[in-house]
Amino acid sequence: MERLMSVQQAPVSVVTDHSDLHAALSALGELDREVIRLWAWRELAPRQIAEGTEMTSNAVSMRLHQAKKKIAEQLQSGRKNAERAGHKMSEGRSGQ
Image (cartoon, rainbow, N blue to C red; front, side, top):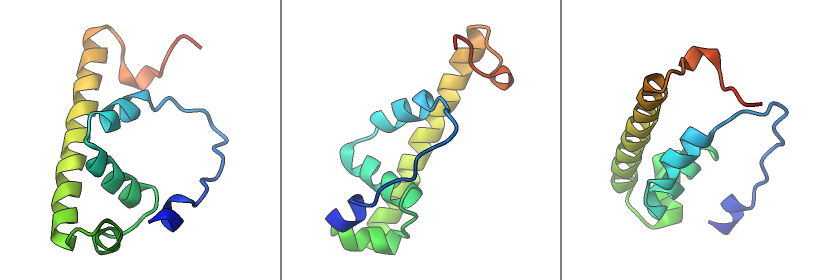
């Protein structure tokens, strides 16, 4: 597991605001965040995640499904709140 976590990410050339995503990830439990990170950023399959986390592949798949659902709900909620505040999501972010 340590070997997987030691892989460095390539520097990002475009600055993008991912605060909504970070907030949604923060709302998850630690194990769910780890499953999402391994799946999304390390591009591991549930079978591979199961090997590193000592869970069954089925348990990883279920956790991954629920975590993605929670993130989607959080992001959707954030978009609705932004629209109510008078922001159109297609116009980008202000205050730069």
